[in-house]
Length: 84
Image (cartoon, rainbow, N blue to C red):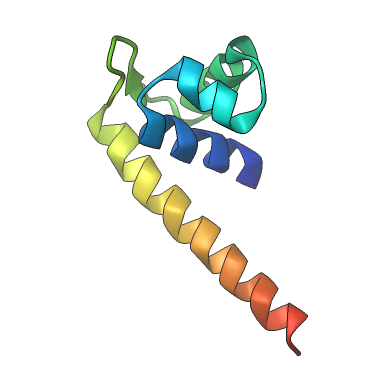
């Protein structure tokens, strides 16, 4: 898992649609689906309920909170490094 995957998941959670999220990320829907399936496999948990509109599972909501916290921390660290 990497920061890109967390970003993909965050956009998917916001858009509630693989199609709209893929468009926002400028990737194919199949690529996005593959990334999400891989992280679900890695975590051993289903993160989304694939219906319209897409819903996050309990594990998905928990992962989103952690992914957003990590993304914010990385951004903060990057700014600190940049302005040193």
